[in-house]
Image (cartoon, rainbow, N blue to C red):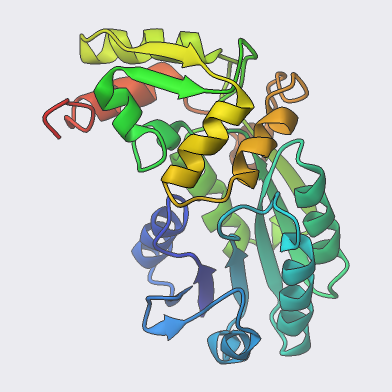
Length: 268
């Protein structure tokens, strides 16, 4: 039995599909799933871990927020205490608080794999920025700093393998795409793929904080842009090749694949 915390999310549902395709029993843990799991209700943790051999840890809303590392530490120790053999943590590159959560998982007393990721390409096609792309204007406090965006399909491939294959234990993989793109470059790629004009408009952190609050999201998410988009994550990494023996998917292929589905059509 493998527990997928946040198993209906961007990476979790993809991991679930891969494991189910291998005939592996999967248990999805979330506030709305049959197996209830709530990061802020420790009474839900132990029941979700009954009979579990491996667990995939994704923290909502983000591992880089204050307090997340301590909660993940408590969960990892609970999992180790009930005999879970392997924990796979989804982390973010260059986020100090996320890196503390990584250390906590590594010290919990069980097998572990860290999957530290660049920005997801799917942020542009699933919830976070999809409406901005449909509207033709991506507004973010990102300046002109490049980011080596990673495909969630690659993340899911690595995570699914790490949950079942012991050769990944004790490894930390940094997952990125094969090249770094500015958000202006992304807008150009999306324009090419959709045949529409999509632009990128840089805004201040203060302006973006208002956007987040209006969307009901923590304003602290905006502060994270100061850390993850300050140039520290510009370099690409070989984590996909290290884990799977193949290159990472490119943003152009992602854009073409999703444009064909109509997800960015304005009428939607």
